[in-house]
Length: 237
Image (tube, rainbow, N blue to C red; front, side):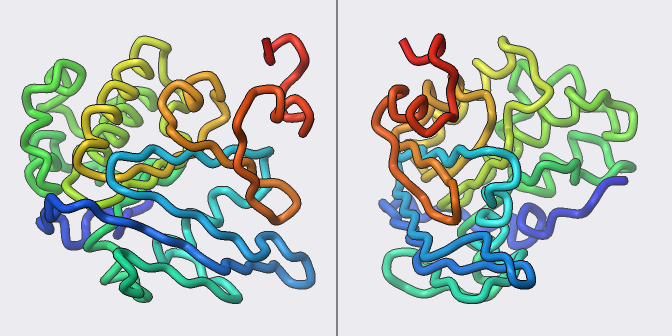
């Protein structure tokens, strides 16, 4: 089942301003019943930056992203852009778009029509998209569909883009192209992303944070990740 993504399709013609923007997420608290998942989380990102959040399954990465985009309620959170609070989904979607883990493109609309709807006309000439312009999402493989979703989200004109597992199910060559696209577009926006392919995450990110036991910790080296038992010894050299 394809789940509609309001953060992608709402306000899809709002252009980036061209100015340097700062996104701040502060004092995030989230609980499920008596279990606290996120505690006093702060995360910042600015134009020209790729900020990565890694952590084990179930640590709360996707939940944090949904809170930032207004798709998940929290006990407490404060989200601002350029020191101006944004606290409704309709306002957030003007400035932030979001790639969820599930597929979200409408099944019955051709890819070329979707590109027009989400203001991504520049992708008509992208070498990885061109073969699928006349296809509908329902006719594509999972990997082909994911590629199109990732590139649409990267190139859509928003001030900030949040990517939840953008490399999942994609081949190394395609992942390299996605990293190139992120590096190209970060001149115009900021990125926050998460993925378990840590080598690709390290390659594309400017700052790295580890989410564990409800808190975020900034990581400066692979050795730190080994000390946190996130990486085995042989991968830290």
